[in-house]
Image (tube, rainbow, N blue to C red; front, side, top):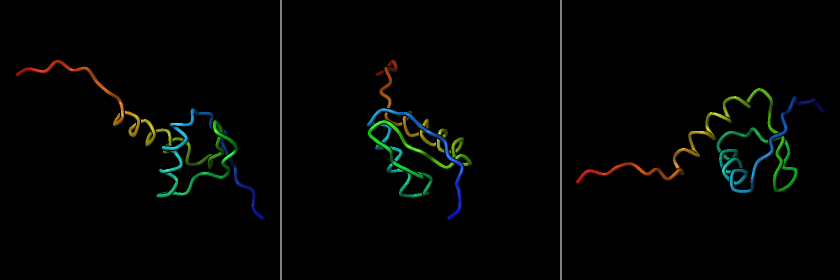
Length: 68
């Protein structure tokens, strides 16, 4: 068996569900520990954080002035 360098992520359950969904496309999760912790591949950390940030921005409500 080969060792894989990992990074421990701590997140809330909602963010974890997004990460699990993202993992279906590109497998980066090494271990699903509990409701708040995942271990991901260390070399994927930066990419995953960027993708997660993009995904969270899609789900953020914004109050922008509307002109009608």
